[in-house]
Image (cartoon, rainbow, N blue to C red; front, side):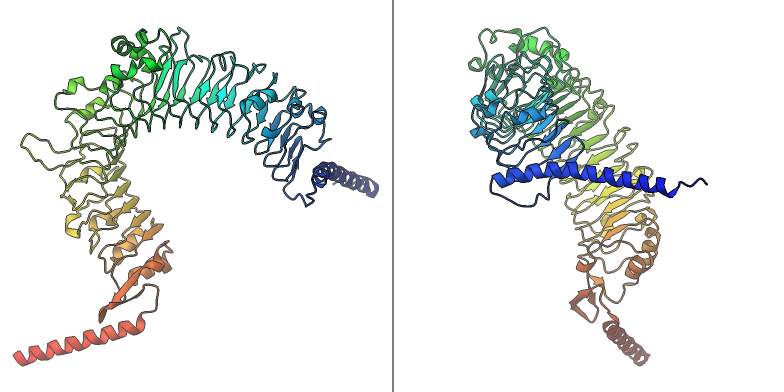
Amino acid sequence: METRPPAIRYALSLSIVLLMLTRYFVYSVLCIHCVYVSLQSSHFFLFTHLQVTNYEISCCHLNLSFIPEHLGHELKKLDLSHNHIRNLNSKTAIYLKSLQELNLAWNNLGESDKNGQLFLQPLTQLRLLDMSFNDLNLNVATEFLQNLSSLQFLYLKGNKIVKLSSHLFQGMPNLCHINLEQNLILEIEEGTFENLKSLAVLNLAINALHCISDFRLPQLQVLNLSQNSIELFVTAEKTDIYQLTTLDLSHNRLLSFPILPQKNILQHLYLQNNQMDVLFTKTVILERKFLPKGMANSHMVKDDKYNQNSRNWLGNITHLDLSKNHLSSVPFHILKELVALQHLDLSDNCLLDIISNSTSLEELAYLPSLQSLDLQRNQIRYIPHGFFHLLPKIEVLHLGDNRLSNTRKKKDERCVSFSDIRTLKHLSLQSNNITRLFPNMFHQTPLVTLDLSGNNKLKIAEGALNDLNQSLEVLNLSSNHMTASELRLPCLPKLQMLDLSNNRINTLPKGIACAALVEADVRNNSLRSLDEWMVAYWSATLQSLWISGNPFNCCSLTWLKVLTEERNIHLPDLQLAHCLYWHNTTQSANVTNNHSQHCLADASTVGDMLVLILIILLFKM
């Protein structure tokens, strides 16, 4: 192997040391500038939070009152957030001409003078500017933002802007992302955004807007208007193809469905937490006091043509959230146009039934692409026969917290059945009125997860779950007040998670012995022991087991040793698990205690009883 002479090795070592010292010196100089600023502010302390990397400096949370000079001509990113900067020295900008990202959030720039507002003008390479939470009003913000032609990302969150004027974004043709969330915006002047041809993302959430009566931003891709007070959303009548893919109108006061662009590629529409009861009612849509002149008679707001053309502007939607509204019926007249819809959320409404008595199955919507349907927390009483034939790709169905029952109150009523739904994998039926599972209830339905919790006094008939033996992995039967005789489970070899908590089970069903359980919960039952052979079988795969809240026998805890000592199974609530002694059923102890002394007393008591019985039998002979 070739070896270098000592002189060369020494020279190389010296070069490395000098390089490290040079880097340390550069970083120290940068630190000294921030220390100097702090000295000027009479706040001297160690800047342990200052972070310096190549082309980036973070001076956040350093109590600075103005921007330090000589930070480096090559600096690309500067973080000055969470300080007390009030004025920006325009001379400092000379040293920041290469700056691309500047974070000034959480300062006091709302009190800045006009000289300070000229600070940003020389930063000709600035792409990202964050001035959130600075108490900026419209006038101050306008002064700061003049002619920043290179800017692409602008964050003005948490300020005091009440109105957006057409002058606010002048001279910023490259803006593609604007965040105005959490201001006090009541009004948007015409021309504010129209000239921003590159604008793709606009966030106006958490403001005070009441109406969007003339939406005309075809270039926009994402629009967030959530948490305002919007009662109406109307798109301007244009022939342009709108590029909007995501529209968030959640947490508003919408009374009806928004009037969307006729030509669009909208995929995600969020309308949850509004006040819609009936969609597309003429009395709501034609509220002329909200519409601009001439639009009240537009074809876009007339019920007949509005519905007739709906396939054009609804056909691309894949995600629709209508949860937490006041809907009393499923809006099939809209849903039938949503041929691309994959995820539909109608939870937390006032739905009594999926269809009314006057509606036939033929009138319902055929949803060829729907994969997930959420109907939780309504008042649904039954599922119409043949309903699932309208959902050929359904995989996830949430029906929890309804009034579903599978007991017939009338002769012509059908029992709830989930058979022959060959795509369904996840079914939630918790907190309904289901009292019995009948045989073949899930025939040819390959469920992977099934939640039946919270169905008081549920009984599982023999063979009710047999059809799930090759698919079921997660089963929740908690809080049903079930006894062991009401819990008839078949062999479920693929079962991994089982929840039997909060029942009245005194012995575990033998059918689950063949399950390859990974997690099980048997809390708050009437179990005095666990079968050792069952525990031994589980221990090959079991990772976690919850056991507290059972009256275990303190003198019969061999199964616990198998779990904790031999197999090292995790018992999260082991310290909460207690047991009882036979000779004193009122005395409880933690299952981890040493019970040998008390159990000897139990054994002697049992022995005495056996002797007494033997003597009695001998006398009778």
